[in-house]
Length: 236
Image (cartoon, rainbow, N blue to C red; front, side, top):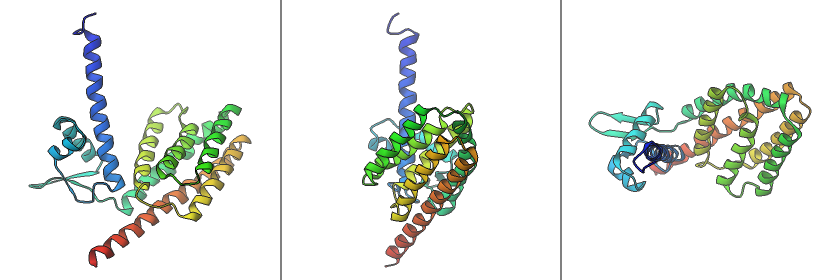
């Protein structure tokens, strides 16, 4: 097979697709984390230079983010960052309220000793980290939940949940985790593992509902505090 054959062509297409996807993910993270400020103008040439790419992947990313409501196109002004307000966070969190109990039930019914051991391993790492590295904690928390949901036969539901989790994860990097919430996370994770060990679906769902409900409210509350402080700084 020559370098110009189908294999080489396919590899090139995969590279372009990966590049576009990574640029989209990077810009989305910057919007959600606050690295790109609300209402900031998004200039294609500047973003391309920042991410060391051509302008085409940036244009594609902005169009995709526009479809998700994270980028606003204003007549005669171009693309701007959508403000990430408490209503947006609330709406994203509510996706999890609906999907996570549905995804969890199958795991509780089919979990093996190895599955439970993996949850315990991740939880031990979370507790050992003790919230000292926020980015690492976010990754571990995501892994804890993904371990319970990734085997579900409904790949559409799992994909929507994963996107929702990534959005909340990016937003959470801009706010602190209150001490009381830190203690609750550990307590709720342990209770969830015990309910799964007992194959008690109802108890597991009850614990999970409290866990994700409190987590969503915490993010909204902390974001509201951040916005209030920012408003006072601007007034001063």
